[in-house]
Image 1 (tube, helix red, strand yellow):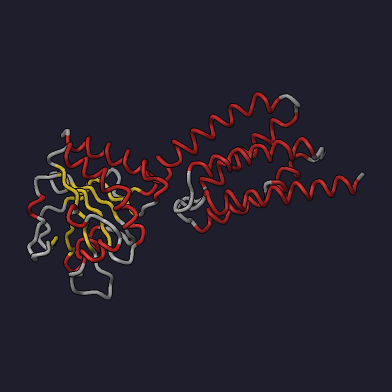
Image 2: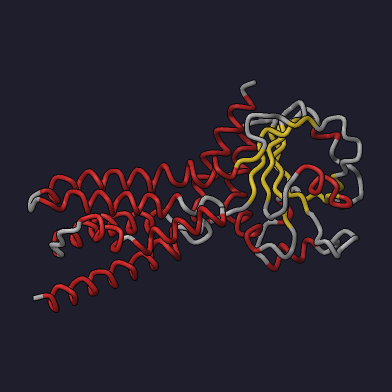
Length: 301
């Protein structure tokens, strides 16, 4: 009897850890790989695993069983808190809650029929609405709640292909800046996903303009004159894109933190409204919703 119990406990424990390592450890923690479907699957599997572990393994020491069954996830959450890796702990924390709910309601045979619809609805809300909107956008916002005025900074140079500074031409407009260089794969992915949408915004809001700001790599001091070839190789409509050059990388180094691409919205008074670093194709629609809301808010002023 004890041998059967021990084997079943080991079986459920191994299955539990493998599922968490697959869905939570490798997918739901990194926004570059995570998507709503994998997060949803992770939450549902966490709930079901918690339910069946508690129901199938009739262990009298409930707390001990719970901590053993969730030990891998608890360790992952602890490591994420200690290393502070871009709020990666939010995903596994949600899965730990789902596991705890399943573990708690497993005492009755029919309880799963009442609790499963609720956990499914909560998982849908978290995975498809709360997670992309709150975790990926708001937690990565910089300069939130304060505007940085840059209208008196005469050292800013946004040069066109002829070498003229176009910074002054945008003084009375809402300017959306997207930084990039030739070594940034995410930058080109963002261009493919967002360029048609941003062109629509330019047509809708006449005082809105979108700029692709080239920031050269640290070792490159001169302007990349063959930018059109770069865009052709990436199959991007270079002639339809307003590409400028950040001379000496002054704007990027002065007002932005590291990382590409960097999205910056500058208001009509030349103040930085928001600054968002990074891009993931999985959250393209989230970017569009957030940007559209910000453009509309600024245009109505």
